[in-house]
Amino acid sequence: MRSVFVILGLLVYTEAPGSSALTPVFVQKGKDVLLEAMVADVPKTFIVFQWRFNKSIALVSFSPGGELTVSEAYTRRVESIGKTYSVKLKNLQDSDSGVYTARVIKTQGEQTVAEYNVTVQDPVAPVELTVNSVSNSSDSCNLTVTCSTQDSHHISSTLTCDTKTCSQEGGERSKVTTSGASLLVYLVNDSIICNYSNQVSWTKDSKMIGEFCRRHAGSENLSAGFSLCLVRTVMFSVGLIVMVSAVIGVHLMDRFNKQK
Ligand SMILES: *[C@@H]1O[C@H](CO)[C@@H](O)[C@H](O)[C@H]1NC(C)=O
Ligand SMILES: *[C@@H]1O[C@H](CO)[C@@H](O)[C@H](O)[C@H]1NC(C)=O
Ligand SMILES: *[C@@H]1O[C@H](CO)[C@@H](O)[C@H](O)[C@H]1NC(C)=O
Ligand SMILES: *[C@@H]1O[C@H](CO)[C@@H](O)[C@H](O)[C@H]1NC(C)=O
Ligand SMILES: *[C@@H]1O[C@H](CO)[C@@H](O)[C@H](O)[C@H]1NC(C)=O
Ligand SMILES: *[C@@H]1O[C@H](CO)[C@@H](O)[C@H](O)[C@H]1NC(C)=O
Ligand SMILES: CC(=O)N[C@H]1CO[C@H](CO)[C@@H](O)[C@@H]1O
Image (tube, rainbow, N blue to C red; front, side, top):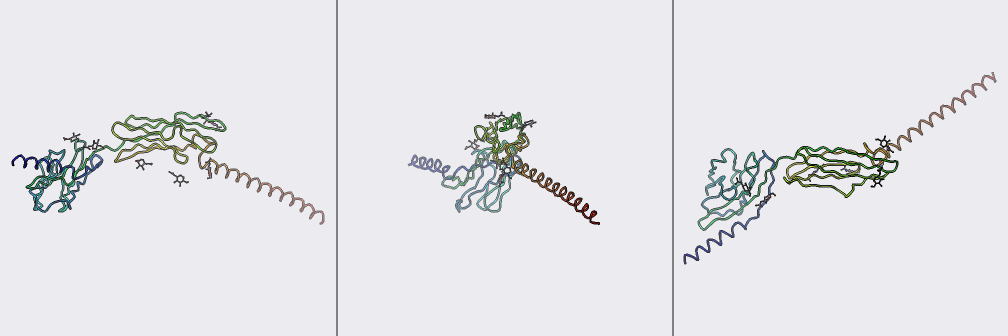
């Protein structure tokens, strides 16, 4: 009889953690995180409602009356949100990365009601996109660019332009760093863009291709060329009209004088 009880207890215990999914949450270092208890799941009668870190470390406990007890290690870092059993953990540091679990302890066992996998990340470092080399001719222009991050990651890419469009050799270039940030170099319209990002932040740098390949792609180039041509035509026409008018004027004046 006793062994049946133990087996049942084990069943309840092993089944409970699977009852709620582990939700991934990314937080920027120094910011706060809201740990929401799925309040609808909280049974009416329980002994204690508890938030734990990495299964073993207690953060806070709520009594059925809603009374809050904050563990010593978390004093002034935890705030309860209304009467919902949800808590806000403030000023997160790297050591706060881990699994946060809300558990309801009842006379007949424990139940997990919410579970979060919190990852604390630093914002990504600034990036700089540099043009390493330009080779151009009358009908093509090639560029090699390198994107460097201030934390020493690099990625290079080669661009080939004909008189109308530019393309990136091998398509978009990307790289994922060991800390999980991704570095991406890609072409949009007539700019080459480098984007360094993680789950909490991103930085970018970009260059207009037109700065390096004058005759080639670049939305200004063709329209600029066109407007330059227009200006020349207008100026030439105005000049011609002035000259013709002058000639006619002189001629008319001459005739007028002769008639006199
Ligand atoms: C919490 O668990 C994570 C892995 O889930 C581990 O990386 C981290 O060091 C643990 N933190 C503490 C304080 O135990
Ligand atoms: C929590 O998320 C981090 C980052 O995505 C991952 O590396 C880790 O394996 C996750 N931990 C658990 C227990 O799922
Ligand atoms: C640019 O690259 C293309 C393809 O690799 C090549 O055909 C072209 O000659 C190059 N142009 C210049 C100016 O180097
Ligand atoms: C190629 O680049 C050089 C240096 O930037 C520039 O002086 C030259 O005019 C360019 N040639 C063409 C055909 O665009
Ligand atoms: C690219 O050009 C199109 C058309 O001019 C514009 O609508 C779009 O916003 C541009 N994209 C970017 C990323 O600048
Ligand atoms: C850079 O990448 C991040 C993450 O993918 C994205 O949210 C952001 O809009 C991108 N920035 C630019 C300028 O494309
Ligand atoms: C080569 C190229 O893309 N040229 C652009 C120059 O400007 C015109 C008018 O704005 C654009 O239509 C072209 O795409």
